[in-house]
Image (tube, rainbow, N blue to C red; front, side):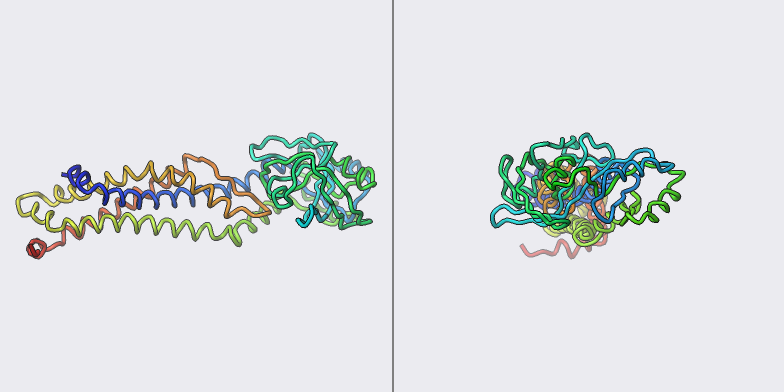
Length: 367
């Protein structure tokens, strides 16, 4: 009886399947995005930044300060960095940001592409994030005007050595030695990443804060908490609202499909009860149809959700962070379970209405 109903009303069943699949796709995309936000935080502070402390100086200083930091008790490793505030121009296209000068084969703060492979610093120019290259409409081999916004404020012409799909934001990288060379300020650093002994972290933090040349000291856990607050505000906070909306829409679609099927077949189901079918057997005729439609909708919804995730991830990404659209079976499993749960609750509500139905009233329909 279930199969006969499905085959005789193929168009209507297809509409119900697509509706439930759309709800499944929305659930997949929102659960994947929520997972993507958490993945971004983990990548930022476990894979990209593997330091314990970040030190920022008042101004660019001689790299001899790195030796002083290394001599501090409890400091295990020090890695210098120079971040220069700039405005990058390519014709009428501009971008205000910073050039990050990193040492070759950096260990504590690494430049990584979207596949978490190391971006090697080049001696022949800067490496731009793909998103930044798109903003400036510049390609490898072309020249970029860089207006420095600190120190002597020189205007530089720097070749673009390469473009990379980065994990976070829209950075511009240069080899530290080359950056100092083009600025004509050799052996300068603006900060450092430190790996320290956790037992002496409080002592090291206090000593660093008391150094007159230090503008700021950031512990990794504090930085992680601050980054989490940024993600949880603005567009990031909307993901929770969207996830709730996705759940409500999914339930609404499934319940609506079940209710319409029941209203269309109320007289037929009442007739089955009259001729001797039990409540359970009568419910199986209708709920079996709902179960079949739901099962057919799950793989379609998974495929639609896969593509929708890329669209939603792009919408949530900003200049500060890129939300990855990842294929995580756990997300698809959770979305499928939410659809199945919605179908079960909808089925229970419809069965309750069926059990309460007045058979005589249901049979009194106009011919």
